[in-house]
Length: 145
Ligand code: RB5
Image (tube, rainbow, N blue to C red; front, side, top):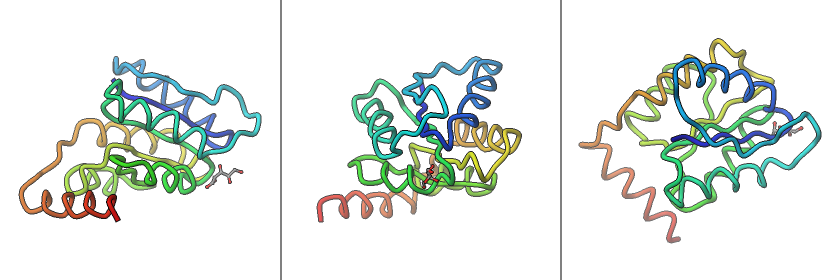
């Protein structure tokens, strides 16, 4: 199960990605927003992060105009590692090396084709562990600062 959330700047891209998730039979919780009316991206980030922290969802996809604001907000939540991506290499390696649990994208930055390729890589790539685990542990230690 994955969770999706967007502000008004990411709403349309979220809807495109949902069609793709339906096509590949990936189940999701959609936390909104449900129109292009203005909402605040930290509120949308919190809704999605709560689903991951509670265990209802394993990973999340977040969308705002740039993908930046909503990823910054998500990264304030303990246990969240969100990466804003606009290329497939980063979307793959943020799973391999960073064990990211949220992929953030900008609805005003990337088109639906690229977004869906990033989503596929993000959802199917496993964390490599090994030498990367101690770095994740250090990120977790920063959460206590
Ligand atoms: C909203 O206009 C815009 O600021 C937001 O979607 C996002 O791009 C922020 O980082």
